[in-house]
Length: 287
Ligand code: AMP
Ligand code: MG
Image 1 (cartoon, protein in one colour):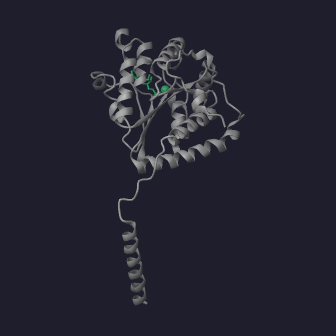
Image 2 (cartoon, rainbow, N blue to C red):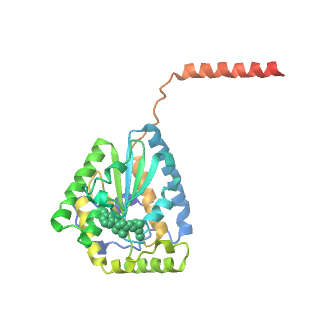
Image 3 (cartoon, rainbow, N blue to C red):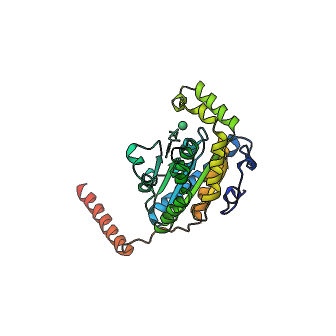
């Protein structure tokens, strides 16, 4: 099995161009059917690892999903992260900021959603919107957004160091043609029509600007503690396979252990047997 963590990671300090990455890549599998057993295997492993993380309460995991419209961010939350127990896992979507959020620094609304020790947080969009859409549409001047790469790196360093958080950032890479195909499906499918937005086609005119903005982010903010992965996402099943494998590998690397019991097990066992004997004799008396 190829190591997708190694294959798709953006090595810190490199200078990538997205045109060199094939969004159609799908490894050895040819179809969803073909890949499904492997995806399921990883989803199950992830569930067990998350249970362990929850029990141990030493580590936390932040998963960041970014990509253009229809790149599949919601799909990853639905298909890959289904195995996680909601008690230790929260998914947060970042929409257009409210006036109150806009009256603060751009990380203000993000920080409270960072994962607590023992838990997993999934960001569907994130603080990176503040160097994507905000940059492309010049919602703040360049001298403001251009400083944000360093500010983001500092912020991510803070939470990784202070809270033992591992950050995995996935850029879902699709082609312009694939986006159009998915938009067409939305038009024809009553269960997807709710996803259509007025700006979908207008945003396509900015494809080149978004690409440039993504490249800058991938090159400036992929760090050892918080790496980016460029996930070929034209095939939804391959996207799910790659992401689930990377998450499992990363969680396995944490070397987590179930905590030792805080009680004296021999004593508790003695109490159990006493209670069981009592039950037995009570039942006998009732007969
Ligand atoms: P969706 O993910 O399809 O529900 O759309 C959310 C929308 O909110 C997208 O159009 C994002 O570009 C937009 N959005 C998210 N964060 C920001 C931000 N910080 N500034 C401006 N727009 C944002
Ligand atoms: Mg949308």
